Amino acid sequence: MKIISSPRELKEYLKNINNTVGFVPTMGALHEGHISLIKKAKEQNEIVVVSLFLNPTQFLKGEDLEKYPKKDEADKKICQLSGVDVLFFPQASDMYGVDEVSILAPKVRGYVLEGESRAGHFNGVLTVVMKLLNIVNPTRAYFGKKDAQQLNLISLMVKQLFMSVEIVPVDTVREKDGLALSSRNAYLSKEERVQALKVASSLRTASAMVSKGVLNSYEIITAMREMLAPLEIFYVEVLDREFSPLSHVEIGNTIILVEVKVATTRLLDNIWL
Ligand code: AMP
Image (cartoon, rainbow, N blue to C red; front, side, top):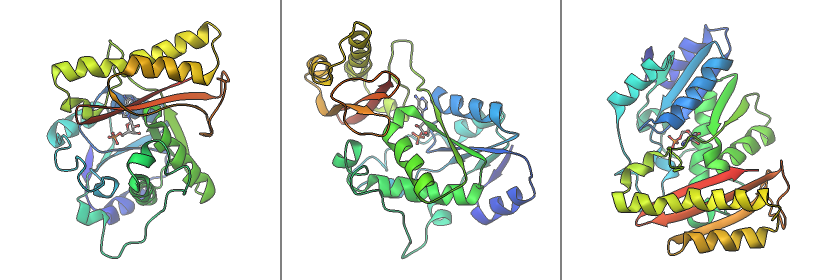
């Protein structure tokens, strides 16, 4: 596995490669969720590039940038064992200068759900993803459905800015008890982790209601909110795949999304129906 930290060097290296390139951007502290993205990229491409970059511009002031889990050496091992061909491992100074051009998230879709309580977060996400895609110039790039709004906004950026990369959504990987894997799960104490299970179980309840024919969004959201209490709820929403609210679940075109705070940790999850 080649490890490259300079964007220019990576561009130079990839210029001579005529194979399909699959790209998996990450912020590190890799887990099985990230590994499933890498596996999918390996299945569908000849070369796999993973980036490991804790992007400072997507954290708001006072958020967890400083305490975000860092496991660089373990991450490198995981990438090597997963058959990654190139690991892009830049420093912030390799990625950003002063007086920067940036991508602005759309004024509506970028400021609802997670974007409402983290105003500006998606500007940072889209800007870094644009930079990374321009450096790697991949055939396909892989993003988790767990971060559904991020996936939606990146797909929108690629479409609206006429970019050529194919964005590939990847299913959420969960612990046996249903908890969606996340690097931020490391913040949870034992007791908080038990509280966190309410998120996945509220989504399972929603799915069971739909299976029984309850399609009314209000009924589903009410039942989920009852289950999530007394956690601090940022949102529970029933949306279509383009992120517009639905009064009723439409099978094949629905995402039910939830975000809560357990102690100081934000947890988000969703199901696609
Ligand atoms: P992160 O390192 O948290 O920025 O995540 C990097 C990529 O992995 C993003 O596309 C995430 O959506 C994806 N990801 C994170 N957690 C999971 C999971 N549990 N299952 C599948 N993909 C995930």
